[in-house]
Amino acid sequence: MKNWKLKAYGFLIYAFLYIPILVLIILSFNENRQSSVWTSFSLKWYGVLLQNEALWEAVWHSLVVAGWTAFIGTVLGTLTALGLARSRVPGRGLIEALLYLPMILPDIVLGVGGLIFFSAMGFTLGLTTILAAHVGMALSYVVLVLRARLAGMDQALEDAARDLGATPLQAFWHVTLPLLAPGIVAGALLAFTLSLDDFVLAFFMTGPGSNTLPIHVYSMLKKGLTPEVNALSTVLLAGTGLAVWLFQSLTAVGGRQKAKKMEGELTS
Amino acid sequence: MKRRGWLTVIPGVAWLVMTVVIPLVLMILYSLAAGLKSGSPAPTGLGTLVNYTRLVDPLYFRIFQRSLVQAIIATLLCLVMGYPLALLIARSPVGKRERLLLLVIIPFWTNFLVRVTAWIVLLRNTGVLNSLLQWLGLIDQPLELLYTEGAVQVGLVYTLLPLIILPLYSALEKQDARLLDAAADLGAPPSKAFWNVTFPLSIPGVATGGLMVFIAAFGMFVVSDLLGGAKQVLVGNLISNQFGGARNWPFGAATSIVLTLVVIALALVVQRLGKLNEGSERS
Image 1: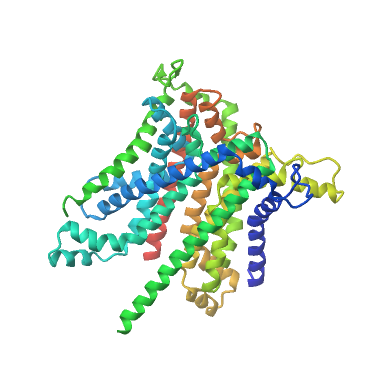
Image 2: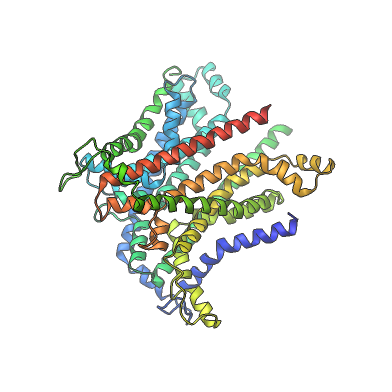
C-alpha cells in the first residue's frame, strides 16, 4: 500500500473510533430531551446528574472495590511473581496454566462461576463477592506485569547484598523491592482500572444495594436512553482521558529520568 | 529463604483456586444436574447429560452457530481494519508514534458501556443517523437500525477493535526495517515485500490479537443485550438468561462449559502456532 493510502485508511479508522464518542459528547450539552435534535446548549443534564444520589453511591462502591482490588491484587501478585522467580517451584506448569486461565476465559464464564460458587457456599452476594472475583481476575495481569519487570532485573544485585552481609529480608527490602517498584505501581493501576471498568463479573455477583458504577449505568440504559446517560458517559470519558494522560506522563517522566541517569553514569 | 522462597506463591494460587478452579468444578457438577432444589441454589438429580443433549436442539444449536459466525466476522473485520492502522503507527516517526497509540488506548480504556451507548445514540429510531437521513430527505420513515444483527455486528467490531491493534502494533514495531530494504534491494515491489516479509513475521501478533477478539466476541452478552434487544440472542445471552429469568442453572452451566472448552481448545491451537513460529524463526 502506498504511504498516502495507508494514511487515509488510518484516518478513516480513527474517525470510526471517535465519531460515535464525539456525537455522544455533543448531545450531552443539548437542552432537548429528544436528544438527537439539537435545540440549544445547556448544562442542565449535568445538574440532574449531580442530584442523582443512587449514582454517587454507585461511584463510591466502585472506588472502594477498585481500591481494595488494587491493594490485595498487588500484594498477592507481587508475592506470586517473586515465588515464581525462584528456580524450584513444585507444579510450575500447573501454576502457569492457572494464571493463564482468567485471561482467556470469557468474562461471563467467570461471572457465572462466581455466582454458583458464592451461592453454593451460602455467601450473601454483594460488594465483598464482587471484590473477591475482581482480585481473582486482576491477579493474573499483575503477575504478568511484575514477571516482565523481574525478568529484566539483575539477580546479581540481590546476591551482592547478601554477600555484603544483608539478611534475606534486608536484601529484599533495600534492593529487590525498590527495583520492582515501577512494576508494582503499574500492576496496581492496571488492577484498579480492570475493577473499575468491569461490568460482567459485577452483574452476576451483585446483591441488593450494592450497585457499582457500570451496573448503575446499565440499569439507566435499560430504562431508556436519556440525555442524563449521555452526560454521565461524557464525565466518564473525561475521567478516562485524564487517567490515560496521567499514566502516560508519569511513565514518560520516569523513562526520561532513567535515560538521563544512565547517560550520567556512562559519561562519569 | 532461598529454597523456600517459592512458598510466597501460595496465597495467590489459593485465591485463584477459590475464584476460578472451584467455580469451574462446581459448574461441571451443576451441568450434570436435573434441576435446583426449590428456594435454594443446591442441585438435584445429579448424573444426567440432559443439559448437554439439549444444546443439540436446533433452537440452541442455531444460537451457537450464529454466535460463531458473528465472532468470526468480527475477528476478520477487526483484523482488516486494525492491521493497516497498526502498520501506520509502527512506521510513523517515534515521537508521533506515542500520540497515535494514545488515540487507540483512550477508546480501549473507556468504559465498555459508554462505547455501546454511543451506538444506541446513533442507531435508534429517533437517533442521529435516522434524523440525518430524514433531514436529507432520503427516507420518510425511520429505518429499523437498532436491535438488528447488523447493529450487534457493528457493536462487536467497534468495542473490540482497540483490543487487536495493540498486539498487532507490538508485533510490527519489533520488525527490523532493514529487512524491507533488503527485499527492495533484491528487486521486490512493496506489495511483494509486505506479503513475503512483513506479514509472515507479524503472524504471532495476528494470532494473539485475533484470539483475544474472538474470545471476547464469542462470549459477549453486553453488546447483543443492548444493541440486539431480545431478538438477537448470542451464547452469552443464553447463559445469562438461565441465571436470570429462566433460572435454569444446570442448563446455563452446561452452556458455559461448552463455551469454555471451545475457548481453551482455540487458545491451545494458537499457542502451538506461536511455538511453531518461534521454531522456524530460530532455524
